Amino acid sequence: AGAVPFRGTHQAGIVTPAQDRLHFAAFSMNPGATRSDLVALLKDWTAAAERLTRGEEVGDGMEPDNALLPPDDTGEATGLGPGNLTITFGFGRSLFVGRQGGDQQGGEQPSPDPDPFGLRSRLPREFEPLPSFAFDLLDDTQSGGDLCVQACADDPQIAVHAIRNLSRIAAGRAHLAWSQLGFGRTASTSRAQDTPRNLFGFKDGTANVMAEDTAGLAEHIWVGDEAPAWLRGGSYLVARKIQMTIETWDRSSLGEQERIFGRTKREGAPLTGHGEFDAPDFAAALPGSGEPVIDVAAHVRLAHPAQNRGRRMLRRGYNYVDGSNGLGQLGAGLFFISFQRSPDTFVRVQRSLQPDLLNEYIRHIGSGLWAVPGGIGPGEYVGQALF
Ligand code: HEM
Image (cartoon, rainbow, N blue to C red; front, side, top):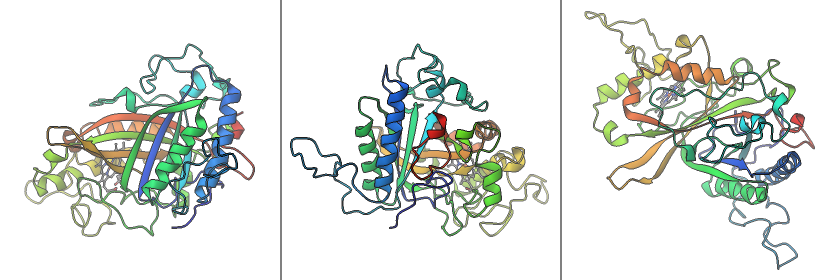
């Protein structure tokens, strides 16, 4: 596998063709950490991430001169190559306004300081916390975080190695709050990729915003002049850990499954068409009964831009299985990740999904929202324009 350039106009890992594996991590700043701790951390992370994405060991590597110290690099990715690794950094709202009672942060204590890093005046107007949604069952220990790091690669060991070494580098300044492994991408982000499937067995990512759609990206994904300079060319990342009750799903009929999504299972075609990429016809009705062919509460109808004032998002999620629960059920689901120009797009679509037929089979159990600064230029560190 190849190497994805780390520096550029936008951060890598958004329009990069979705890799096969994910290790997503949320970090909390340590109590008492200062603005200069934060800047030093971002500089160190940038230097390490650049090396990691080239397939190089961090720092002085796994065999530094001084054998009395632990090696800089933990070593388990040595020899595996770059594996198309991308590392994407995001900033949580709490970095700007402190941890308030309502902003849950991995079950951590609220911070009394409303401006711990002197960033309050740089908070973008649109960067509001996500509201709570119907059926949310969020676990604080899998939600929020002052910083997020999305590591994607074609080899799970490369993605895990990246998060592990970035956590070590954070020591004394920030610590891992929670993390999530994902296997099996559930979205294509390039027309060159085949559409993968989620754990319900349906093709996922068909109607995504793709890398080739530069006009769509500019309109719907990249933040523009509406935001402070540090965020232009960036995006907002929403992560939702969505548990899927696959045992119940597996007992539902094929017809019911297709009705829920509004698409066919094998081809992924809208129920009003034949090919995967045929546009759904939401007005089509069954002869006789006059019932709509695509159910009024089908997932594709409710998520479609036509129901959401034309708003679109770039989905980049992963399947996960976190073992099983002792009742014979898998802890399985979708680690949903989407990038959008404004958090409001996610809020709008998620609200529109309130009557979704799918809701009987899923539960949102984790959540986070981060502002992903624009690309990292030559010699710069991530988020430099913020300080
Ligand atoms: C479309 C699955 C949750 C937003 C789809 C499709 C599938 C799917 C199979 C049709 C194929 C495609 O275009 O990708 C799921 C599953 C979910 C889930 C299994 C939960 C476990 C969500 C959530 C959102 C969302 C939480 C956003 C709030 C969308 C959008 C589309 C879509 C925007 C494209 C609609 C269109 O333009 O036709 N999803 N989805 N999905 N989903 Fe989901």
